Structures are given as structure tokens and as C-alpha cells.
Amino acid sequence: MSPEQQVASREEWLEARRALLAEEKAWTRERDRLAAKRRALPWVSITKDYVFQGEHGPVTLAELFDGRSQLLIYHFMFGPGWEEGCTGCSFLADQIEGALMHLTHHDVSFAAVSRAPVAKLLAYRARMGWRFPWVSAADSDFNFDFHVSFPDGTREGGVFYNFEQQPDPEIDELSGTSAFFQDADGSIFHSYSAFARGDETLLNAYGMLDMMPKGRNETRRGNLMDWVRRHDRYPHEERSTRG
Image 1 (cartoon, one colour):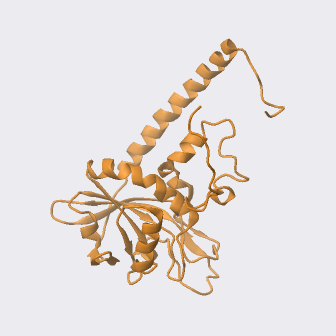
Image 2 (cartoon, rainbow, N blue to C red):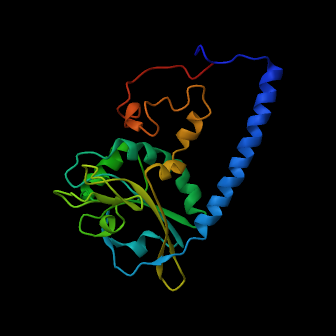
């Protein structure tokens, strides 16, 4: 226990918890307000014919909707020359799996997009035990147009990422999430994107850690490299699941 940690009676704890609950409720209402503003953003019409390479051949952006009106795409960091996917993206993908059934029954399709060859993506997906659609944008401008992939070579002016010009990240791929809508006529619109810590809403493990005494316990906030491993790279330990 930290020497700075206060220890109180149950009555004192209850009083402090009620005070915190009032702040949590205010934050929940603020989150709802921001979600409404997110939905009220203007949309951008998608006029480029994006074609990806999928498990069974070429697949268009429209086909990724799979008969639904909404599509959530995760820009998964897996570059053309990489041998495996990004650790942090893999951590997020683990948490997508449990939501897939619920999303697809609520008019939302999900797909991951990366620039690695589709054979590498499918092999890695099989290794990880995931089921979501994963397509390659190796022959498409898609990830460049959505500012998560960057040209090779010198980038003295930096890169445009998270809606502003930033210093060169010295890597050709970054992550993000983009949302799309397809109307009854087949027109597609880009409604929302989030990058960097904006993607934390997809990380339910963080929500659990935020309830714990040690919190996220990272050397700096958002530094997944502190502790996260691909789920098949954690040391194997036999632990009882019984109390």
C-alpha cells in the first residue's frame, strides 16, 4: 500500500464515494452531450472508388457494409513489410471480438484495414483467433487519404495526423477509427474519425483498469508498450480461477 493512501472507516468511505458519484454522473452527462455532438457532425461524401483485397478477392468499400447502413473501420497498423501486426492494435482487436455479434445485429458492420498483403493479414488473424473481416489497402489510397499511412522517405514537414500537422513519427503507419454511412441509394458518407487516445473508447480493458487501485499503472498515460503483449506472447502461468 502506498504510504500516501488514506485509510478510512466504512462511513467515511461512503461519504467520499457519494461525492465522487456526483462527479461521475456529471461526467456521464457530459459524455452523452459529446456523443450527440459527434453524431451531429456534417458528413463528407465519398466519391473515390476504393477497392481492397479481401479473403476471397477484391472487395469495395460499399461491400464492406455487408447489407448494413453503418460501417466502422479500424485502421490497424500492419505495414507492407511487417511480419506481424502492431501490439497496441492487437490489444484493441482482442476487445472487438466480443462486440461483433451485437454490432452486426444493430445495423453496424466492422472491418479492419491495413496495407500489408492480405495473405499476411489472414495468417495473423488466424494466429490471433479473430473473426472480423480484414482487408488489405496495399493497392489503394484509402489509408493515405484517411491520414494513417505516410509516404516512405524524408518527411521534413512532418505528417498530418489527428487533424493537425505533427512531427514525423518516424513510422509509416499509425492507427485510427473511421465511421461511415450508406444510404438507400448506395451513396457513402464519412461521418467520424478518431485517432491516438480518441480510440480509447474501444478499449474496455482500460475501463476496468481505471476502477482498480493501481489504475493503468503505466510510466506515461497511453503507453501500452509498458505492459501489453500480443495475447499469445504473455508468459504462460497456471493460476487458479477460484477464490
